[in-house]
Amino acid sequence: MEAYIVEWLSLFARWIHFITGIAWIGSSFYFIWLDNHLEAPKVQADDDKGVGGELWSVHGGGFYHAQKYRVAPRKLPETLHWFKWEAYTTWLSGFALMIIVYYIGADLYLIDRAKIDLTQWQAIAIGLGSLAGGWLVYDFLCKSPISKNQSAFGVIWFVLLTVSAYLLTLVFSDRGAFLHVGALIGTVMAANVFFVIIPNQRKTVAAMIAGEKPDPTLGAKGKQRSVHNNYMTLPVLLIMISGHYPMLVGHRLNWLLLAAISVAALLTRHYFNLRNQGTEHKALLAGAAAVFVATMGAASIKPTQARTDDEAVSEISFSDVRDIIDRHCIACHSVTPSHDFFDAPPKGLTFDSEAEIKRAAGVVYDQTVATNIMPLGNETAMTIEERTRLGAWIKQEGLR
Image (cartoon, rainbow, N blue to C red; front, side):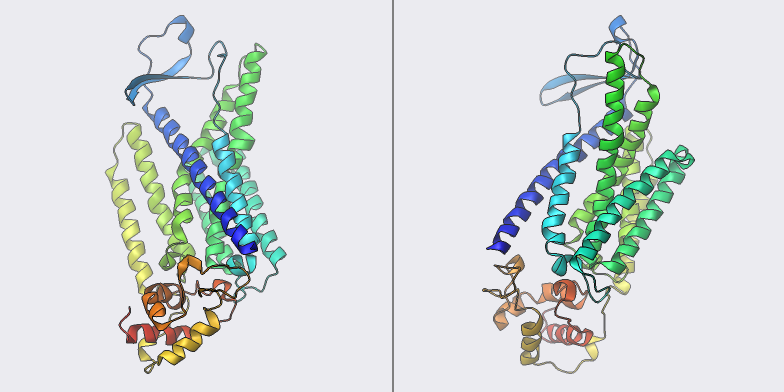
């Protein structure tokens, strides 16, 4: 019953995380697009003095006229729409999902005792520490002289994130490490909204209510953090879907592959931001494609952490495979799982019969032979030799 409830809670949190993430990233993309398309106002009425740019658009059968003030309007409007709950709810639902899956299920999903034999609370403390530490370092960089040079800032922050990814893969399971890199970036993005963007907007509104002139640097600082968030969205989305692709997550150099594909994502985002400003740099898209293809090629050269020459293994009998499956897989992947954490077989995969094992051979190879993602946390201590024999049988039977 406990596993059943955890699964439903996981579904609910993931659904909310997905919905609010769309809303948050969508508003980020839209407002950066809007900023980059603003034109100098043709005519300014007295009430519009101070408008820095405007834009006319048509959508859903209607016309829209958007204006942006250089600092603030002369008079505060009666209704003012704030954009914050998309960010807060995305982070809160993501954090809830991390607790449900990776912290409650730390022994399965987060801890890899082949790397470091952590207790559940030690793993959780390291995970939470990485989120808090990431924000503190990022915020320090934003408040330092480095932030005045956006290119230098971007390179330094990217290098620090890459180092974080490498260190986390040394401590956690591969999926757990990737999840925490994404959570670190997501925490920085949400903290930007919570600690800088919204408070600065509140200070601006408070100054207007008090009849004072708002400080223009408040808006500039908020815009800086907003632009940072815009560039970090694509790597976060990549990490959100990465768990479905063992050739990335389970690779021996997974942290480096993540960094390389993130470079392609950043080049793509930069292309569209510049294009929206009226500058076309197709070389950025070509560069992004080249980086992605090069990463694919590099990953295929030596794609595994536990790769051995399974071609050299002598003929394997199914009884040998049955023994390996029974030792390491059947506790979860059975019609009636005996593992305490599962009431139903994960992903619906069952290995109770030879036919079922053969049908799932491709998945088994990708997640157990080509990578060591399975068994989860390698809690059954599956050996390289066993992985090799399993892979040899799959190839021997022509299933891969």
